[in-house]
Image 1 (cartoon, rainbow, N blue to C red):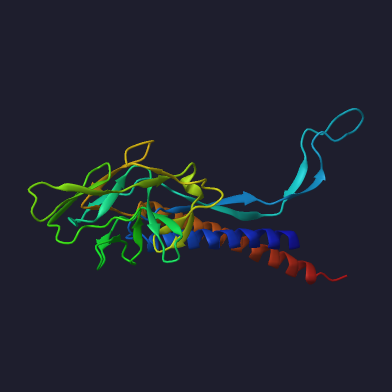
Image 2 (image 1 turned 135 degrees about the horizontal axis):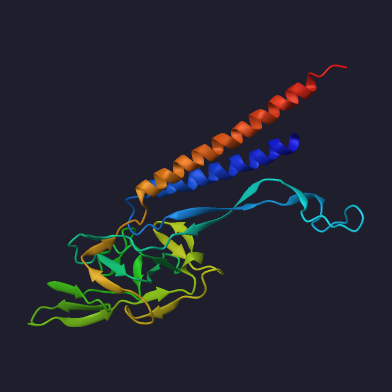
Amino acid sequence: MMRALSTAGTGMVCQQLNLDTIANNLANVNTNAFKGQRAEFQDLMYESYRASGAQGAGSTRQPLAVQVGLGSKFAATASLLGQGTLQPTGGTYDLAIQGEGYFQIEKPNGQIAYTRDGSFSLDADGNVVTSNGYKLSPAINVPRGATAVSVSPSGVVSALLPGNNETQPVSEIKLAVFPNPGGLTRVGENLYEAGGGSGTATEVTPGDEGSGTLAQGFVEGSNVQIVEEMVKMILAQRAYEINSKAVQTSDEMLGILNNLKR
């Protein structure tokens, strides 16, 4: 009976972490460019009483093993990298990536982070920055006095400067692509950092080498589907409930055993 208690307990722990993942998805349903996560599980080791193919009576062999599982474990949180809906903002510096790729962001410590959130603005020096003031990398500086700024799908930034009748290219936005974007590490603030699982970033021009293009005046929304997350929540609740029932049943059986009299 004690094995059933611990086995069901592992199931309850897994479903709690599963619900934590679902809750985080729902909490970020309105977060720009948020990518949902999916909880993944694995079974634990097995206690073997008899191996498959063990010697039976006479010359026979046992076709099946006798094994008792010891529960489950939380294995990973997989990132769901599907495209979020593009939401029009009309903002001059709002950008959305249509396809693969990440904007490169320089943090205050000089480290490069990555994001899909293109809700940019200008700082006091004319640099394109995130809502936290982190600069886009390579740095994009809009000349003072520019009356119109446009960004092409391939990332060319053009500005209409005083004394000119036509816009002039002033800079170019680059994207980063990864062999395994699902291996990026989430660090908050809508940022990711490269890790051993993601591979090394490759800087590309938007639209090249399989990367996406840019859409000015849009931001990418969250790709979380509320109905799907609600269904997952119900399933997690039922799984937690049935595991707790196994704990309760094991406890009742132990109580019967404890009350046995000679």
